[in-house]
Image (cartoon, rainbow, N blue to C red):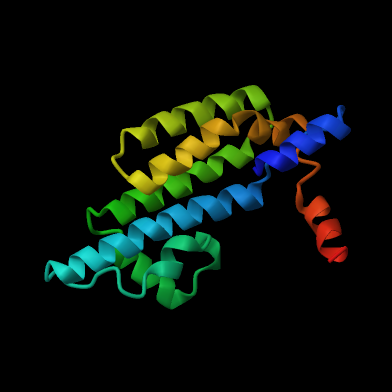
Length: 163
């Protein structure tokens, strides 16, 4: 979350509950996963390995229920390998459970354990993502405190209207 924005809200809207919502978190996690995939694919080609990760981007980034039949087959193929990209994908999919919690306390416990596990993974882009999550932990948990009723999408929609 942009620091000047948070400072402004804190100063002028003292009773506001800042929320870091699902859309932005998932987008940042997907960006980290794609960074892992692209880097690993490039290294595999450079080292002369079979280009297993070629055309796998959307298989790894999309929700499993939104995959085409072709992408589903490709994902199954990729998941057979012990790659950082596969481990990053599994972390991404596991993180989706975070959004299922109702209680901010239990969501926080899940978040803390997930972050701890990822920090042991040696997958640098995901570790950087964990740093972001930890820095904004309370904003993430505000999503649950607000009973998942609000997102920053409303503010962004209004902001886009004014431009």
